[in-house]
Length: 101
Image (tube, rainbow, N blue to C red; front, side, top):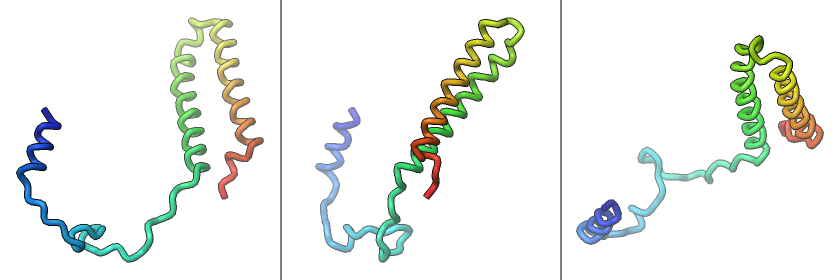
């Protein structure tokens, strides 16, 4: 249904291209400067690490609430989980992914 409406609009609307209409602009101001540089992949790595450690906090909160009910097995699971995350953090630190240049 949606694609048929798009095709119907293409058939019905007027098509009057000219160079002025095809120039890029933002808020009515012509583009005179080149676009900003792209973000480096390092920014995305830091953002991904933030998300990973944010999720760690989300997983540890219910564990802390039910700490008494889980006993030793729950404690060992939490230690394994945290040590895996710390090993990943140490690896990223060793690779230099946390260095902001």
